[in-house]
Image 1 (cartoon, one colour):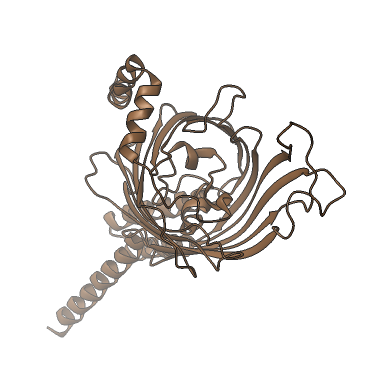
Image 2 (tube, one colour):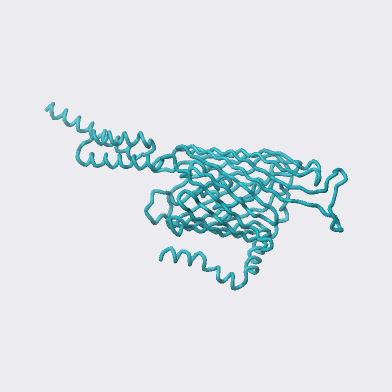
Length: 414
């Protein structure tokens, strides 16, 4: 019943929207977002196109969200907080004939996270003249045709500093990216290009307005600087500073909000206007969840709805996006992600063993066997060095033993 009420609250506006008509609803959103006269001045837009997955489904409001490998697009600090090693493959039917393929692999070892991402945007192109005939440029013996492509490769690393039982730590991370634009010479000469750029991010978690029992923190803050690099042929990269918050008011529900501030490096051009994104993820069962998000970019707002379901280690995510470019013929703006959860390298089992030893130590302490309790807690710390309660109990018990020893010596002296 509780999840039904959550759904009713989240989707209550939708019947009203459809009653008015989807076009009227989207027109109202577009009018609210306005028109940005500075749009289109940057290059390598593949850097900001979401390949799919939960990152796209939540409207790209993902700077403070770390749920899967989509972090690599939003905040490079995320890899040090992921629970599982993941391998994700994406296919995105973008606009018209354009397609995007992507793959992401991420792994975490303790407080260190590493990742690799690769995505390719490709668009078939055939030029025609004013009479509808195939067009041929003067410098080429071939007709102007081929694939326009953009490729982005990403290396990611992050580390969680100051991590303990009572503090989730401060995670810092970075991405090193290489990008290549391929333009066939028969279409345009000298337009292929290569560039390098970097991302930097920070993320932390804590409890705030939490009304349910859980060891996981329910509130997170994220900051990311993305696509920092030199201009390409005089055109700037779509650099951006993003600040995000994520909040779980209930265990199955995550709400997120991002503020994005575009800026340019190395050119004297006005950047796009500040934009916002909101997202939602609701776990209906242990194997099925739904997501939705709104990316309020001036002039091109975008609404996305998605669903994800898991079958053992396989997770599938399907999204549909409505924006100014969405069409039904051909049917586009659909993305599919297939993800393999490859386990957590034994972290959960180690954590469980550490807690069992801690509880065993508490039992020994309650029975007055202080030395036995200390041995159990030391074993607990060997498995999980950041398990602060075990360290605190060792210090408390040793002080108690010292006090007992002092009292015994005084009694002997008397």
